[in-house]
Each structure stands twice: as C-alpha cells, then as structure tokens.
Length: 260
Image (cartoon, rainbow, N blue to C red):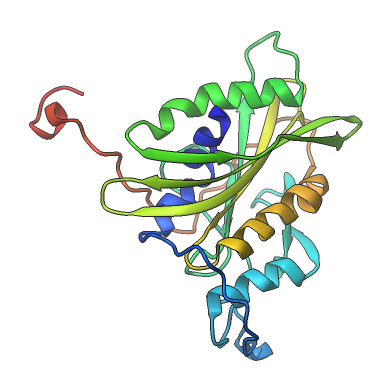
C-alpha cells in the first residue's frame, strides 16, 4: 500500500522527526493518577499526570471535537481537545498548515494542498493517487515496514471520501520509531484537493496511539471543512519556527563528495 509510505514523509513525517527510540508493545492498563486541570497546557497536554504520554492520548480519546484553522482561515481541521494544539510548520515537504499536540509531539497533523494535472477528474481516489505520485520520492532512503489497514470510504459533500491508515515502523539511520497514521483526500476544489493526515508516534503506548488514530478515521475526518472555493495557499509569512526533518541517509558516493 504505497500511499502509507508517502504519508510517512508527508504527515507522519513527523513521527520520524519526533520519535527517536524503539517502542515497547504493551500499553499499561492499571489505573493512573490523572493530571490536575491547571497543569494541562499547550506545552504538555498530559499535565502533571503520572504518565503524561498516556494522559495526553487519553485526552485525545475523551475530549470533545473542535477545530483549528490555518492563519488565513481557509479551512477547519477537526481536532479533539482543540484548545491544546499549537500551529506549527515542518521542514521536509510542502504543506499548508500543521499542528502539534504538546512540545513532545504527542500527536501531529498536517494539511497539504494537492494540485491535479489539467483535465484530471477531481475525485477523492484521483486526489489520493496524485498525492502518492508526488510523495513517493519523499521517503527515499528510509527503511520502512508497514502494516496497512483496510481503506475506508465515506461521504463528504455528497462525494466518496477515501481514508487510508496504517501502522508502521521506520528507521532513518540514527534512530527508529513505531507509528500509527491516517489520512484522507478531499476533492475540495475545481482543480485540486486537500490532504489531511494525523500521525501518532507510539512511544510506550501502541494501543492508545492506534485508538486515537482510529478516532480520526471513524469520526474526525468527516468534520473537515474547506472554507474557500479557490485553492488555499499561505498568504502570510510563517512565524512559528519550523521543525526540521532529519536528512535522508546518503549513498556512499554522496558521502564521499560525489554527485547525488
């Protein structure tokens, strides 16, 4: 399922950058002291809980849906516990807007505007295919293992909406990460699409990460809104400092100073 790989660079992207150690495979099930309400912040939505990672993911499962917009108010991206997401920018791929959940990137989302070749039907499935063609070279040089999940098709603005998701593992030479991701392709414009994706690095909470990802698949993606008839673009300069992605491993010739 090639789309999964593409999204790794284009949304879970972020998993590569934010998780730098192998994850365990068993989520804790014992009761845990929750965070005190005043300790829940943009920097740490898990607050002062005994396990902030687990507490943050549990908030993403239990808090109501809201939405955040890009700086130019061209879309609404559904987010649970929406007040504790921070708008951000990521290096490594072209995207319209991104958000992170906490300074430790407990969860990450990104939205990309995807142009279509002239004459291409604007449908979710064609949006997804063109997105894959664009994204395929973005993850060259990474070692990725994937466990694709069934594609889901729902209705958005009276048209089919294709949602894809996967669990996976990636290594980029200096570290590795397990992750769960999902993304949807919206036929939002007469000549283009919007791709909205969510990424959850597992750390030590694989079961919770999968459940949070599945909440987007089952509930969240349906609430996405494009607010303009014309394709969205960034009108204003970005003020958040971008978070760089690690460079892909070099070939031997590149490392020696030869041509790529």
